[in-house]
Structure formats: structure tokens, C-alpha cells
Length: 371
Image (cartoon, rainbow, N blue to C red; front, side, top):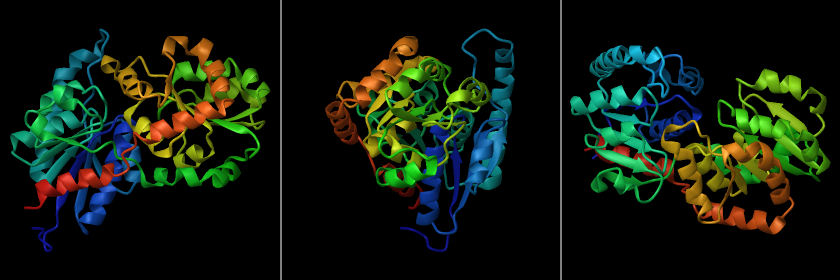
């Protein structure tokens, strides 16, 4: 039974990419409403984007000095054991100081030491696995944590069946409203309501292959009468700005990062996207036709597995990264011109949405925290 007098203390750990950060913030926001006056502390990795995005969302964050193992031979790997041990001591120190009632892990470098330390101290723990192919850290933690919230069926091949709860991935509340924001979005981006709009997303950090694929065929897109909102990522923004300078403003909106995703989704007729877990969850909710270009630079090719879970149900299309420069734009033009194909993909992807993910995860957290 909930203790009305108690001030609950919650640690949320995760980061590295928007795919880990935004679900964590979405759940934290809901926990703040469920437990009025609760104290929420984020734990991330020093130097990663959570150290900026979490404070912007109004939460305190502590950074651990941790980084992942590089998959290629590099001197940075020599420092990994020392950073791992230091971050583990840091995690124990945070737990002793903050005295949380529960720790929730959303993936990213900081989650591993934080959740491991929490299980050693017998604290209630929840992890959220966003992908259809479980990461090595969550697989190791699964034997010790109390609950595992997953986004795909069939995850018992990675985790103890009795701990699994199928919740889906948490999505920002504003995304749910995206379908009703076409008019607002067109006005915001200064686009022509009579033209079809292509939304290009390379993830929060951008994607070289997608950017090059679009850049090389800008004329073909323009000649097809298609306008674009193109998020190219902060690492590529200056270069893309220079190389596409003569096309800007004429049905082309180029941006480093899209913060108002509801407006961007609202104007989109077709979306080109990497196949990160958060992107897929958002796209299922908005019900827009999508072409996935899975990143080849992720562990165990999990983005391809994520995308194929939709492609196999005729809920999306896929183009391999190696084929994108040649095929991505022609495929996009063909799809955006085929109203029936767009309708079918949009209807099928929407069937895979899990709009109550945030509420369901909070419910599991509450079941462990409130006795």
C-alpha cells in the first residue's frame, strides 16, 4: 500500500543516444506525476548527450566516468578496465548517498555499473530492453534484476521468462498528437500544403550514408515535386549546409536536430529513418509509411533485426546501408507517389504500436517500490 507520507527516491540511468535518453525522461515525467514530490536523480556517462539533455528536461544528473569497449583495436580499450572499476565505485557511492527506493536502467554506458551495483546492494531494479535483439549488458543483468520491460515478443530467448513484461518503448507524449499537427507543421517549416513531404532522420547524431544518399540526388527529389525536412545531425550539419546551399529554402529544410518531432512527423508523407528502437516506436504510433536504413555500426546488427520485425509484417520497407546511395531516393520517390502502398504501410505499422508503454512501465516500477 502506498505510503502517502513517504518521499520516494528514484534513480534513472541511461544515455549515450536519444534512443536511451528520451524514453528515460518520458518515464521520469510520469513517475513525477504518480508520486508527487518524489526525488528523481539521473545517472549518465560524462561527456555524453544525456549530460545536456537531462538538465534541459529539468532533472539533476550525475555523470560516471565510463565508456564502452571499442570494437576495433585501439588504445582506448586499455583504459576500459580502470574506467569500469572507477565507475562501479562511483555507482556504489551514489547509491549510499542518495538511498533510492528503486533503480531503473534504460541502457547506455552508465546503466551497467549502476544496475550492477544496485543488485549487489539488493535494491529493487527494473531494466528496459528497447531492441528485438537484447544487448550483452542487459543479458548479464537479467539474472539479478527484478523486472525486465521489453518491446518485442519472444524475448524469453534472452531473459528469464518470469521477469519479462511486454510494455513497448516509452514515447514522448507529444508524439502521440503528431497525426493532428500537419497544418501546424507546414506553417512552422514554411512548406507547400499541395506538395508531398519527405522526412529524413539519421538518428540524434546523424547518419553519413543517409546524408550522402540524399545529397547526391537532391535534383531528382526536387524534379519529382517533393519537399523535405532533413535532420542531418550535428556532426554533418556544417558540411551539408555548404554542399546543399543552393537548394535551401526551395522546398528543402535542413536542420541539425529536430526538437519538435511532433511537427516534423505531422508534415511527413513518407519517413526515411535509421531503425533505432525509439524511432520505430514513434513511427508505429504516428502510423506513417517508412523506409528503414538500418545502421551497420551497432552491436550484433540489432537495427536490421528491429526493422525486419516490421518488414516481415508488411509494415515498413528496408534498404541496406550499402545499397542506400543508389536505391534510397528512387525507392522514396516511388513510394511517396503510390498512395495505396503508403496507406497499407501506414495501417500495418500502426497495428504494432504500444501507446501505453510509459504507463505500463510505471506500473511495474510502482509494484516493486510500493509495498
